[in-house]
Image (cartoon, helix red, strand yellow):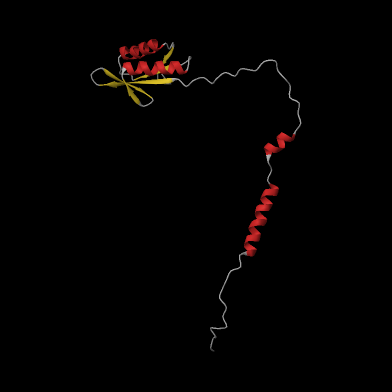
Length: 144
């Protein structure tokens, strides 16, 4: 059995049916999808009027958390938003926060081994910045 090489035709793939199927799928998806915004805008509704605009309150600002960590020798290490701070730079940062938000709140998280004078120093920085909402956190142990 001998094959004629000249009788063979080169192979080719006809892409026309594939393209037709893709266009049919796209057309189906466009026709069946719904546009909610367009549907809501079509409704003809007469909205009530109000004499004054309602003033929405801004959400309360996130409190500024000052971490006071214990260092050997009775010293303290101050952190605000994972940034180490000195007392003067802490005062500046608290003043900037007070300018951004009048009702700024400060939460002091002091290590149990830190002396009270370091917590009081942070309270003094807040007072210099004009912040009156200052609180300290403690850990509550249940069962005692």
